Image (cartoon, rainbow, N blue to C red):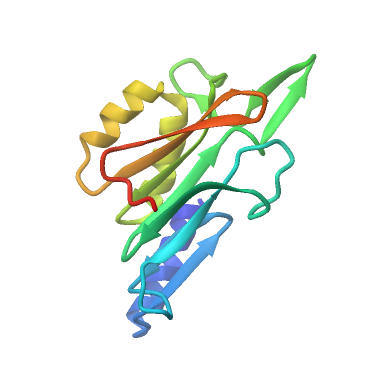
Length: 165
């Protein structure tokens, strides 16, 4: 829903003649043109640590965008802990169960935010290898995975054209 909302706001601003802006709703982002310094928009990605507030602890990668959207989906903020086990809010549609994965978050760059939002969630359900194959098959789409390797340590993996600094 956030990706759809971002696209609706984006379309309203664009139709009304605004030529350079960023729309952000709950971490879902879409930009038009360059920022006020004449550069691509620089978007940080939160480190997926339990209890980390948005923008509090950015992972080392920064994504550079122009005329694109980006959405991030992960399992580190929205979950239920029951009997010592964490249950993600992301449900695998193949079996109707909460996902259990070492993929902490996936950020997707796309032409619009609805597609970015949907793909970010889908790539959390798939294995990294299957997700990478999917994203590499789509023209104009890129992804960044943050994989939990234990004790608040993470490995960052990207598709071949992900616009990171």
